[in-house]
Length: 198
Image (cartoon, rainbow, N blue to C red; front, side, top):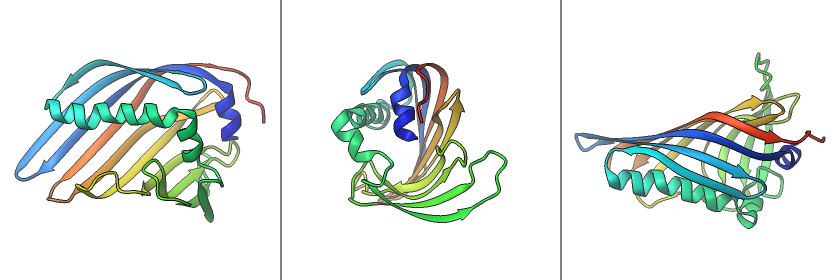
């Protein structure tokens, strides 16, 4: 079903609000960036910065780097190695919950290879659409020497027949002390899509 949804999605435009906050060493730092995103199938994403605020090094080394990493991950060779499928992950069924939103299946996911784009943790799957509704995980490979642990929570929303990101929060513990929290909110989707073929 993921493959069918990917094939159906022709393009979209949207806006994202990025925020990162660091607390530690008796200080608090905060940076924000608003970005317009344009996706064109199958592998092109363009990011246009609308506004930015906060320390320039945080904007450049954290927020702008996120968009560069996502652009690279979207390219075909990388995309195939990070898709949520049996080629890249081992799955274990944990439970079936009664849920008002239909996200009833809970699976454990374990990456088959350490890759900074992959993760280990739990995913919630919609019982009718077989789409991922929510992820609670940590990266399969530590993204930086300076980070000892990162916990990621991502939620998805259904728009028409498609499921797209709604929000993401990542909390990282910094090796030398302190904690950094990254929040991404996905807004104003304008989607062009064909019919979903099962």
